[in-house]
Length: 72
Image (cartoon, rainbow, N blue to C red):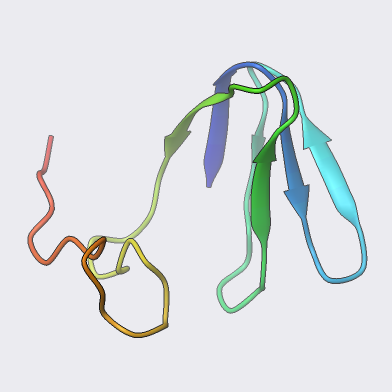
């Protein structure tokens, strides 16, 4: 789930896109390919996901992968 705090988020899917304004959220179903884009150059979001989700997706582990993320 992406909660937009500032700016406008455009979420691209294979067959469409959706614009998400500040104060709104979008839920991306598990297994759905998606690509977020900040429309105004910057977009602030709060991302909610399960703790076992890897921050770099299902691909190969690389230098951007966080093995042990911080918890709030």
